[in-house]
Image (cartoon, helix red, strand yellow):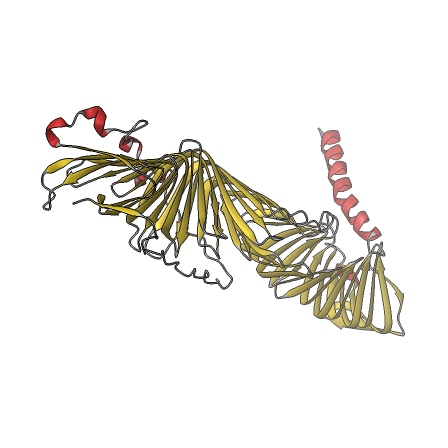
Length: 540
């Protein structure tokens, strides 16, 4: 038993002695001083070193004007032009400081500068743990690294991994950008900044806003994992997740995407958006919805895919919608396979079985084009197999058919005139003055004609070339006689507002920049005088 206790005592003595021996090997040694004075401080023997002091512990050297060296606790207090060098690579300077040889922990105060190759930190207070390679400044620091300058109230720096952690009022500046946040982790090897708080990255071509993501300060590539936005001069792109390549001006947004064109007051929403800055192309798909904000109304366009193209050479802007397109406005509803909205000349072109409704009128053709003036319908051009149907007060179908037509709308967006050019046909229900009884039906064939309407009722028809007319009295009216060939009343297909609003309402992105008011388009007046040589037939 005594042998066992003796053996255990030996092991205990060994383990207690090894750290002491290791610490003795790590003793701070004096290499040079102009003078050395022995002193007693706090009851312990101390060496006071004056003039050109140089101390060493392993690969760490300390230079200063004067110092107190406490051998019994392996500790140094240094004063005046203090300089600590670790491994000939990390240099810390300041007015005064301390160094604990036991823990290898340095504290530097007043005019502190830490230099690590191409990185320089300046602050008034720095703590540096050499064992964990962690430096910390608790009160205002500035990092300069090549073109990057980073300022924050607090910060950490790992001299081995070269990773900075900046906290509170962080500002990173570069000739190409300015980043502001409350916390940023910056890897100086990869040049990537990581953040998990509200962060703004402002560059020459726009501002990025996010609360969770990473930003490559060299390439400008960004990945945002929270609801984020990119604010360009003309657009704001917002999504639940954003990837952006600044160098190539490529952006991808997913999840509740909003693309807002500031100047044109156009909002495009969808599941996914792709932005090609150099080509001026934006593509939104997945329940895509466009909103054109107007003074007293909004134009909604929805489809499988919406594409915006901005041609800087011609200064033109177009929005393409294709597959299952539906539109809604208080004074206009419609559907087609695809359309082109030219924002430059305020026209909308409809393709592939388009049908539009305006109040009590239905308009159809192979292709159709709307001219907007002051954000209201001014003219509508119908090309090939044109067909206009209007309901009168008794819900009779007044019809106009022809090769090409132009429909005119007044300032209240009411259809008041239709001109027919080629293969014109017309069916007009004639009512009494009180609009309570049917007097008969006029059927006319004439290549060119002009029909004037009031609240869906035909008031006057001008036949321009040898009309072939038939009047059918009420007792002779037969259903086929009241329908032109190709007649189809498609009101059941007419989209309501809820059919077009395929997405939940989302808050409009707010730009950090000043908005420009959209230019106002001058209203064009339609000439209403009767052309010379017309034959006029008044319908009472």
